[in-house]
Amino acid sequence: MATTLIPAAHVRADRGPRSRGFSAAARERLVTAMPSDRLLGWVGPLLVGLLGGLLRFYHLGDPGTGWIFDEKYYAQEAQSYLHNHVEYAVPYDGPVSDPAPNFVVHPPIGKWVIALGEKVGGYHPGVDGFGWRLSVALLGTLGIVLLARIGRRLFRSTLLGCVAGLLLCLDGLHLVESRTALLDPVLTFWVLCAFGCVVVDRDWTRRRLARRLDEGGDGRAGLGLRPWLLAAGLFSGLACGTKWNGVFFIVAFGLLALAWTIGARRVAGADSPWLSTLVRDVPLIAVYLLLVPLAVYLASWTGWFLSDDAHACFRDWANATQPAVYHAGGGVACTDNWGPGNKDRYPLLPFEALKELWYYHHQMWDFNVHLHTPHLYQSNPWSWLLLGRPVAFWFPTGTAAPTDCGADKCAAAITALGTPALWWAVIPALVVLGYRALGRLDWRAAAILVPLLAGYLPWFNYQERTIFSFYAVVFAPFAALAVAYCVGLVLGPPDASGTRRTWGAAVAGAYLLLVAADFAYLWPILTAQHIPYQDWYARMWFKSWI
Image (cartoon, rainbow, N blue to C red; front, side, top):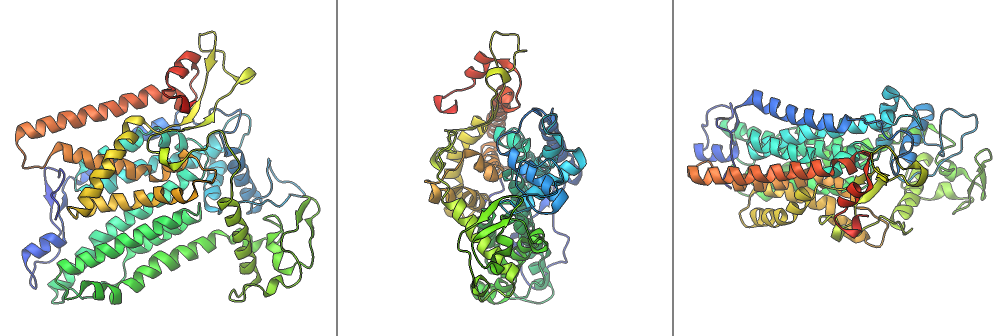
């Protein structure tokens, strides 16, 4: 087993029964001690989350005079959810007598989250954007607390957990997206929740297996229901119901759950841990991480099933008799593959509504995969970790530019730019994680590396598509964990000499101060501060940032 990075000063052992059927060494390997500083284990993450909340809610409604990037779609579609339970064509400013069906290319959950914020915080286009950003900012803040708690469990160290939370708190990309009504930060939160549940399931499973051994069983003993893996499936379904790339994380979490279960049975002395896992655990893992997410995803389309005139006519595709304008008021023409016999297609699907939903998903897939419209801020995923092409979410020009900065020419910008001191450190951290996961069989390194790659690598398959670097926010929490892992290595093991630990603490502390200083320097261009144009230009370190 890999050496603990830097544990808390005191740890508490699992409070299960005394070992009777297997060795104390096996129990120690199976049930790893947790930090005993329970109070500090909550106070630390909450304080880091408080800092993150202050940064994310600071003047959250500004700018309220215009939409930030794609807010113009999601904030208005969220309003349609509140009034009609499905999306109608934007612009949408309230109930209308004859709304036009709308062709949307993302599932509903993320827009429902934005809608809840609008319900609580109000909806005031052109005046204040607080309402449609409220829920996203709240999830971004909670995500920081959650990451700190996950890091504490992962590293068995409250300190390193808080370091991971602090790094996410001070990431410019996560900050900007937590202050913007987009789908990606919502997806990020659900993915993080699912990951946390999978990590807890690992500990829960090993404790349960230890009890089975104490009761006289062996490494092949059944584990029963796994509530934390069920919760992971629920959150994974919410992730997929926000954006489809949540599917890649289901694969990642399934692989982790499978590998960790096999490892636990091997430690417990199972004669054939692979076979035992295949027979006793794989069926339940499949239910939790395949069927449960599918059920949640279908439930997210309840508005589709209850509607008969939304989603650009596709809801009535099965009953269509000829190409026609389905909704005269909206003027939406449905001419693609329409005609008699549609209800006989997809014979394996039992209901017309499911056939129509399947066909609609086919159209969504076609749009998303073949989106090649050039965009000024599109970028290749090869450049994402290097921060090669950040996205200018908001940059008013001409008469809309600010004039109150005390200089002849002013600027205000919201730039989806990760903190360089953090993201550039991720590149060598990936090398370290790869070595520790494969060369040292460190489960924590694998736990971070697998979902990080699940959020990053799939985009290389769509390099010809119009894609943006702000998609990287979904693996920003794992980037923070990766760097925190390396900070733990720099700090050194608990049995190192005092000189080694002192130098390690100095280097780690200096690095965290560098991240904080870098973030503070970029703060004006992350939050639309009115600054002299030359100050904005000084923060554009590369031509590709402009």
